[in-house]
Image (cartoon, one colour):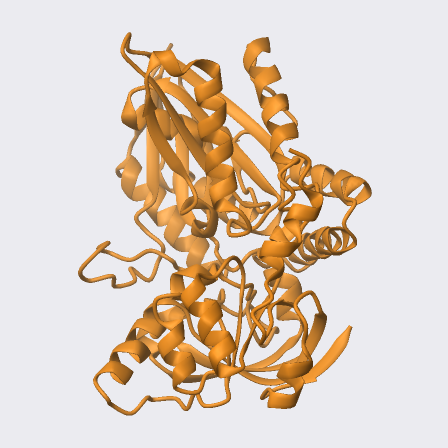
Length: 182
Length: 283
């Protein structure tokens, strides 16, 4: 299990290999469908973003509300492919890391390789467990989007696995065939 | 049988409890299947994923918090006894009020937007619910309710097969749908299959199938065997827990059928994640 500090350093990204189990500690932002659409459209128009994405890691999540006394609500990953349309442009504008679940298209893999980024998967449907590693949340922008607003999470030992590394190796492509018995 | 009067609030409270309970407490059928799979899974990563899912579901139960952040679209299958009269309100309003209170007071996520294409503004109370009502003879109301997450819902598919496709065509379509879903719908999955009816009945059967406990089987032995065969075949695909490789891609395949037209053999596949949530109640 590798321990990695956020924000990601280029050197750390280079050393991460597809299949590595990692624990992330530090700061990440959240965002999913609606927030991605807004960020994408602002970049296309050449306008300033309400949140600095340079060097950031974004977690694709729409959390459930926090139940007192807990600081955050259950917060598991959502399916990443819905962000594929927006991801290459965000990466070309500085985004480094992504955490989600499920497959990405070729344009995203190319953007990861081109920009020296990384794609992690968290376990889908393990929201209550994952929330234990999220220590605080802060609303950054797009409050009107409710659960889809962009937040900052401070995390400690957030568990995930490197699915697509900076060389473009992808364990969704390489691991399942090893267990195929068809 | 005499007419039975009930208060709208009885429905509100019943529905509210069903949606809170189903989001906090995973069914025994799923928990047993996950624990069995943890023993038989050959991939070390897969085993670890299953272990974390089990831990997750235990945390949710202990703390009474949602086991998944996608607390779903509120779906209900209702058998409404024709001798039941609601004396102070409407059935639909009472059900939606129950959903509203569960999602608000139960710290569940509100995931419904008012318009699919143009507005996409959150209704902020997770209504409206999807209510499938069947009028039956009797003086009770039976509810089967669940929150359906859309990570898996989006991987579902329907095809209007025709009779000459036969059982092989049905099998092919189901397996293709699961294969196309791959790692996306939070495996290990529950596969709900509807066969027969017309276009919309077929889709509804598939959803009903995902709402059936996975420790049950179709009452027709031929379909029960088909369920077993499909489960075996799906688990040979290799996707495994979280799609990271392994021999536990699905923990259940449920089939529901209905009479259909001489020209048709529709098949619908409703995919559900391992957080297959459903609870029932009778009032």
